Image (cartoon, rainbow, N blue to C red; front, top):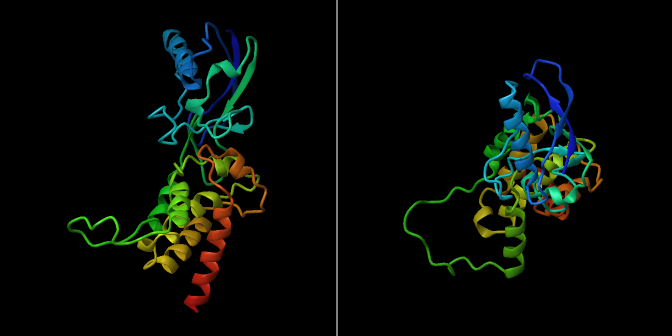
Length: 248
């Protein structure tokens, strides 16, 4: 398979960037999207050119590092999948593919396709944790949790913090990410002691990072590789309102 790639190249955060066109040949249908980029980088290195910088780690859809905007879609055309899970069998010989970094004020470009997503880390540090005593593990049934709540909490906890929700949102909102992190604790008894503090702190941290507001476009849910539901945003709003009232 022969492909034309239009890849965003940017030397550093302060330099202007632009799309550069490359030709890639001999691409197998069984390759993942990142393996295809590896082939291109090998060719560039042989020619003495700079390789394209892009984030990756596990390549198993677990870490959330492979944050690529592919043909205008976060992580590409496959639903509920990361960029590394996208395979070249989804393309045809002669296709042109445009590859860009995630676009958001809170995700500044570092180089080429790499963006700084440390804003998510700061939001998480603001309240995405529980404070518990150390010691021996308690029995599993000491804190009974309704099955429905446990399943919803686990669904929310599956968020890998890739940032696709922000990239897909026309307002660059981080509401789905924050909602998932708040929901996974709000649904469990272990998260109750810091419930109010968590909702206020994480919402405040999100606003401070410069993310946009949520206008219920549902693009975040459509782009999420872990299929996080927007119902979590409603839960976040309820948690925030409750915390705001109790704080007065």
